[in-house]
Image (cartoon, rainbow, N blue to C red; front, side, top):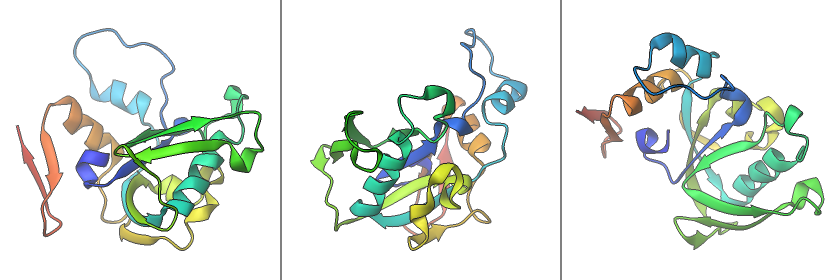
Length: 167
């Protein structure tokens, strides 16, 4: 998602990824991909401050260690962070770095995320005032992004916002 959208960070809720099994080596079918991403979510691109991003990460860890109900746990790309489960749910995330640089709460970052998360699903209600660059009507389906990544296509946005793909 991050590569396709050309963003600093990508974030997807764990509950949006299904299958709950190890898939054997071999051909990946459309059926398998639908088992893993059955919801038809779309990759949206937004701009948000580091403060909002930190709120999102804290939301993702707020139900831990209850993994049975932790579909909101964020799977991320482009950042690293440490979680202290002894801290209150809204303050568990620490030492966030993006591209090796400490998170700046005032800086604006670009983030790729599913429309479900952008619209407040799994408790991600902090995105109400973010600047939407690509909404669910214009973004690619997550399933398509995964298919292209598996097919080994190089996908990147151009400076004018178009998407280019090369085998």
